[in-house]
Length: 156
Image 1 (tube, rainbow, N blue to C red):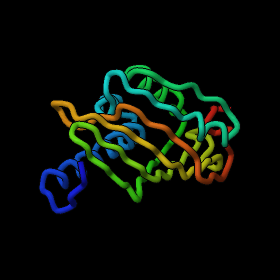
Image 2: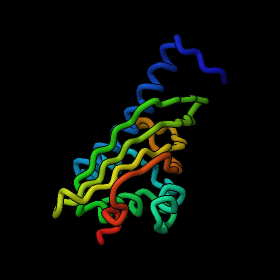
Image 3: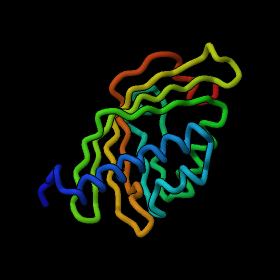
């Protein structure tokens, strides 16, 4: 299926796909588990290993909406975060969409605001259309650049 940027249905899908990414980010940043959960399929897979390796730690592949939400909510609970998306490139093919997007993720220790870690990551995301809208089925996070104290991510 070719992408026709002037097709109303395609433009609606592109907006809805990007909105799914915003739900994901807002769910993390606002510590809203319900909102975060709404961004994922039940059988979703989240792979942060490429970015984690560049930061110097191992992070397992997470499988299943509940596992992803629990892991993100727990591992980021001691941090204030802000996630900003830019340059999303969305390709829609029927009930599947793929997005390549840059994400700037600021992580600040809730205990010591001087401890910070800023990452610019590239997300490769596959989404599925559901009755309730688009949901993330698979995401791979790789790191483009980073600065600060990576131990902030591990709570050390």
